[in-house]
Image 1 (cartoon, helix red, strand yellow):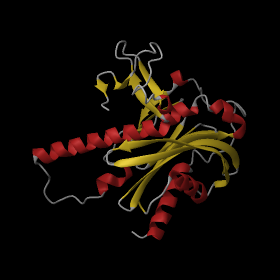
Image 2 (cartoon, rainbow, N blue to C red):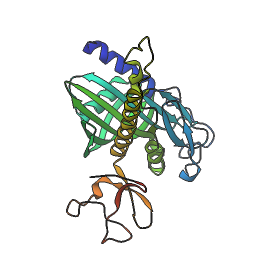
Image 3 (cartoon, helix red, strand yellow):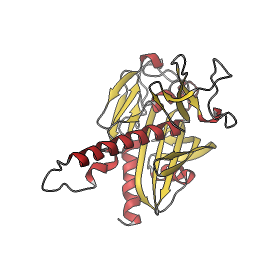
Image 4 (tube, one colour):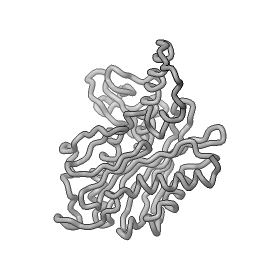
Length: 288
């Protein structure tokens, strides 16, 4: 696959994911500017399972899903959250370059301007080191002036790169209010079908005879479990948090990565500052 074909393919993919029929619907319905089309109370969010992803969103939100990403859109099109990924591209790329690439290759994104940009901590996932940035971007989406918060990440290896972007956007006049609930929607997107994502399960042609070797089956299950863990680790890195819990009470937290105390080697327990939180979830602690 040459670079020209790959560029055309990835541009077409991002266009299909980030400008799905829902996200392009800029018309205003009853409720008017400044009021979301569905309740923004996170307690009212409904959990959904798609073919590749799970997510939580208010009732009535539309989902456009593929094996490489998903877009969630409010009924009036003024709010949206999305995740998209590109795997095994030729060459190397930084998160900043990928972010710029997205906003110059999606046809309906016009007049993009990066309002602010900050680097996030690197994340080690399997054999890859992912680098991340978070940017506030002002642009128009099919003529609708919007502002979005997007987190882009890239991992370079063996002359290739993987890249992902996740975030949300809202009409300009709705943006301040959107920041109270859209991050939760974007952060709820989790890859659950790791084997089928990004065409991974179509890369190898099936053999004439089925594989019935128990050792190979076990290895395949271990591989899929590893992909699931990598997916979860990637989501945590993109959202800038890590799951933690109080080992005494079992209370869970999503600790911001920038709250990690290197001198003490962990996250400080907000209830008992002289103690540290355990990384992971109750019953599933993370090792260092």
